[in-house]
Amino acid sequence: MVVEMTYNSARTDLVIPEYGRTIQEMVDHLKSIADKEERNKCANAIVSVMGSVVPQEGDKEEVQKKLWGQLFLMANYDLDVDCPCERPTRESREEAPNRLNYPGAMSRLGHYGQLTRDLIEKAKTYEEGEEKAALVVTIANLMKRHFLTWNKATVERALIVEQLKEMSGGTLILPEEAVLVSSAEILKSKRKTSDALDRHRGKKRKR
Image: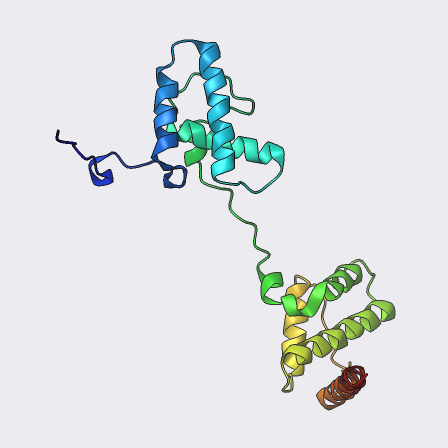
């Protein structure tokens, strides 16, 4: 007796290889069932098996939507069953995802932190005058401190002025006469803080 072997290379490619050929064959059989009620039972059974074979992430509703979408995909969307979620279509799968809304300049200047952005938005609501000018100087000094946290060298005043203007959409301008905290003073304060933290960690290790 000669047994004829069938190799995977001679078979059609699997739509979702992770589920294996057995589940694909179950889906093919599902499409051949004439009775609608039996098809529904079989479809639900296949989805249950799929969920146990390849664990899915997300809440229950999200997982069900994903599994039924995969079932319809393996059936080439030629499937007449009652889907418990929105019926998957070829068009919905082929839709391009929504473009992510990147924050642009805010992403590039993210090292200044949320507090800086909140203060900028607050300052933009102020009337022109001493109070607004004082807040702008405070923001500029805060930006300088944040900049030197991530860049241990010095920072030019012109850079802070330019980036403050950029982050505020051109509405906040540092007064010409404003004096910012010196880079040396900021770096000295950082070293003191760092040394104090190192001493504290050293004491904890000795206990």
